[in-house]
Image 1 (cartoon, rainbow, N blue to C red):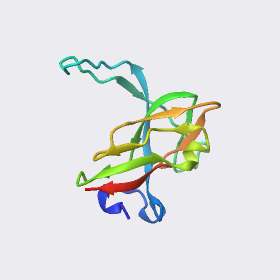
Image 2: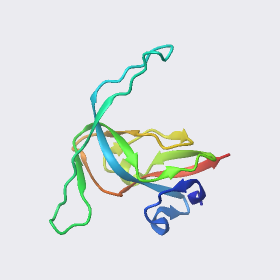
Image 3: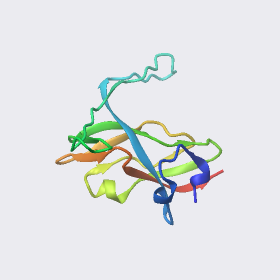
Image 4: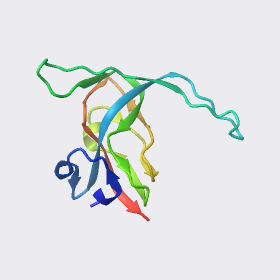
Length: 138
């Protein structure tokens, strides 16, 4: 279910389940310089970002981890949407229970999503399932 709207899937059998379709983290960004938003759009400028470094916990690991302190980040997914429909995307309970969250969104493409991390921070592994598509409307 919902996989028909998703491309660049990491591992469909794990990501697909009865409650929706999980999306995985490809990259985490810090906002390093503010963007600009104006009334008419003539002065609209994106924020400057920098990739948050990740590292292996053990030299023989295949995947790296991000160690995130409390704060705001931008999340980039491995997956893309086909654009044929609008999906509802929400944070997975596994993210919420570890002090992270992002807004519930209704999108037809996957933008960088604001990720909030509180308290003691959070560690995310490359390809971690952090969000779930829970609805799709054409």
